[in-house]
Image (cartoon, rainbow, N blue to C red):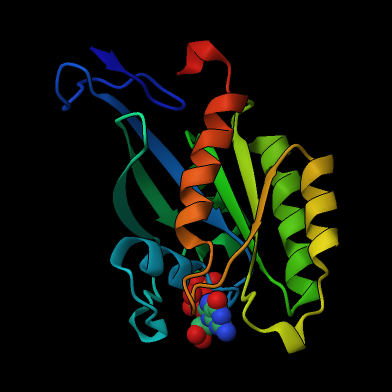
Length: 194
Ligand code: GDP
């Protein structure tokens, strides 16, 4: 059995003999309104439904994907649903998270600044091995774009982060976000963590 997990030891491997099962605690951070809930719902349920947002308390969803080499990855996705503004709660929320997805809205420079705030916060207080993705969402809103693709890429590169632009509305790059980010994270984390 080869049971692997990003971050902490996995107690039981529910998979078969040759299965490699990763379990990944993933926290979502970013300004309110950038599309965090919509990204998760698109990924987990394949829907774009802005009305089914959880407005009070942190929400939790999980989704398992199969990678090409028969590895399965179970994402435990933590969406703060607005609680991140209570700064005192934030460390509780991202403790033990192996990966963090920090989202901004490409039409909002303020949300891009806020994303950079979260990156610094995680660099200071997150787990030392944490692997981060920077996500520019609402990429379908071309005419309203105010954050250049280049700005996102450069910031991510400088901070050793994965970068992608997505649209929860059109589903563009949503699966790629999770699949490619896992590849990226497994290549970045030291072997003893896996
Ligand atoms: P959260 O506060 O970060 O969880 O944001 P939500 O997921 O609630 O989304 C906020 C608003 O942005 C909703 O009205 C969504 O319809 C809209 N939205 C989310 N993702 C997209 C997207 O990719 N494209 C467009 N055009 N709108 C989006």
